[in-house]
Length: 240
Image (cartoon, rainbow, N blue to C red; front, side):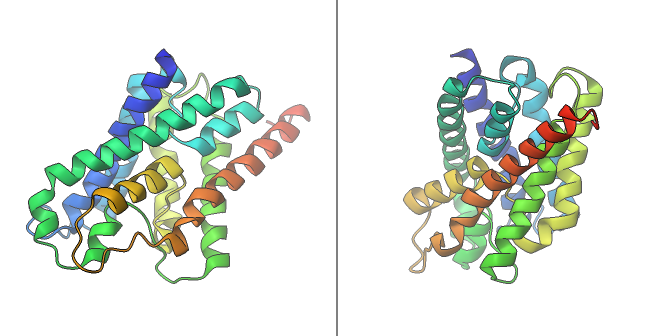
């Protein structure tokens, strides 16, 4: 139960800080509006690193269904614990988004473009192309899961680990963020998308965009599975 609580609170913090930086940069009348992609990259890297530092020893600091499934595939946790982890992550992501909707309520009202509001909570492609969008999320999450598996002692157990977690997130964002927003995580995208659908403002054009929304739900899990299977093969060969 303590691990589930850690995943719930940690994912909530991740979304609060990560989607929070998107709100800060994109919503009208924010003091940091227009901060730009580098501001977002730094913010999202810290958004993952901070709860990893806090909860790494308690749960492994997954905060991501793709990471959890990958850890189970590599034998790092019991499969019986996987559903509880994922439920906790999704609930945490939903709560984090809901809190931000309250905090930034006035700024959301001041932002006429609903696509901008939605983009603060969930991702979308710069050029809609289902195949390439799927591939982008697949590859980004493949790199995320594969490289996190290389971090010694799990996230949160040393300053080196915290820095590596930050570096992986920023590197993935810097290389792939302009394609799809680099969700890489259903708890960071699907859960806030549901929160936006249920709790977000109705400006006459509210659309959670589920036509695209299935991609950041499915592609990260697929990328994490392949990354972990390859890790198992290379580890068995002594190549890692």
